[in-house]
Length: 167
Image 1 (cartoon, helix red, strand yellow):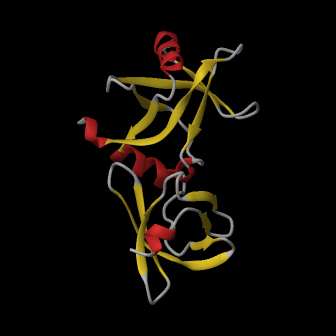
Image 2 (cartoon, one colour):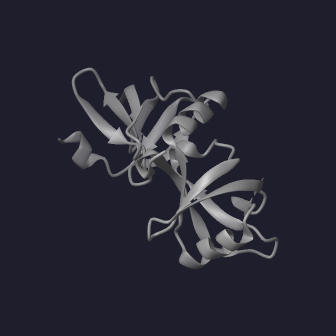
């Protein structure tokens, strides 16, 4: 496996709490993932493979990892990237029923912008194609553009997309 095969799915927090767990934040498109094994990418591009012993959402999103030393190092560095290999991520999404955003409505400032007509993972981020019949644009599903994803009603509420719509 190559470094470029890893896809960022979130980041770790900067402190280990009294329960020995560290907070984490997943990117909006991966909020429904259940984590078991993952890669941590440090700022100096050092990569560590760890297993999740426990995931808890009762007091925010927190993880207990199988390597206390690596967890402490990650907390001290702040902002360590959580990643999965792209092939494992695709399989995990399919196994957990998070298969596709196709036909999701895209809403910006309460206005319907279009529907998702295509999607793919370029191994750096998940990209969707939004079309309203007349116009089409591509958008990465990243925090900068995604405000909220509602799977129940198949809707993605977006923000900061003026420059994408005007390309």
